[in-house]
Length: 157
Image 1 (tube, one colour):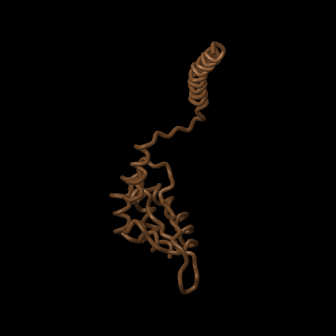
Image 2 (cartoon, helix red, strand yellow):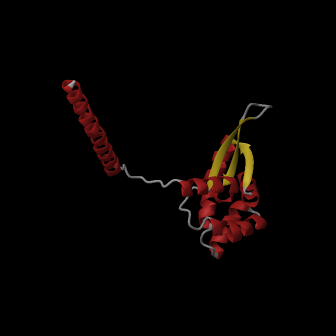
Image 3 (cartoon, rainbow, N blue to C red):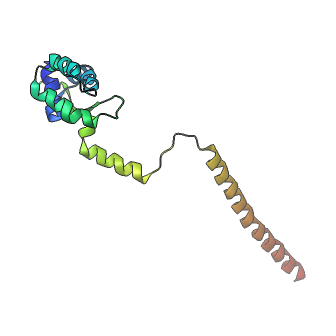
């Protein structure tokens, strides 16, 4: 069952199944995807022993391995879709990460729009509060001068 699911996932890039099967499939197919990074006869025969399908092995080594070459792991994504009507089993879609163009397009625009950093940013915050404090002092100083000017005019009257 897992070899058929893995072959379908490699050929179609996305499979709808139950969550339990998807989690089992992830453990089954991710080592195969890692083996496909090195295109040797030994790795091809090892993967064929698991999949038993020439077309899926060819697809895996020719197209999929090229896209996942730089990825250090985590080749699949599980998206929960709800519950099945007949037996209320939790359903999901398992897909290869690099083949979801919709999600790749949205993350590409989000990453280009906002610069993300992993640092705390304590210096920028301190600089921002220092400039706000200077601005506050600058606005208070003319206000204090105008108050003293108003008091002097009242005294003169």
